[in-house]
Image (tube, rainbow, N blue to C red; front, side, top):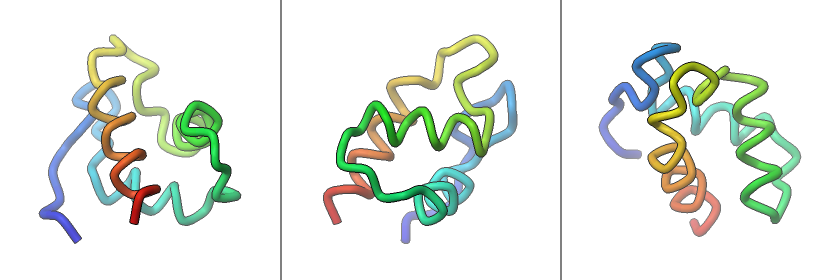
Length: 65
């Protein structure tokens, strides 16, 4: 697993928080649906939205494993 770091500064969501939320999701195949599930669990990208691309990249990376 990658080193843990903060991805969403507004909501203090880390890489590991996103990875954990993905484990809890239904493993949907659509990255947008997965993003919405992760967002519901972690509240990432609900502040300024500046981390949206970083979160999507992490989701894509984890889904490709």
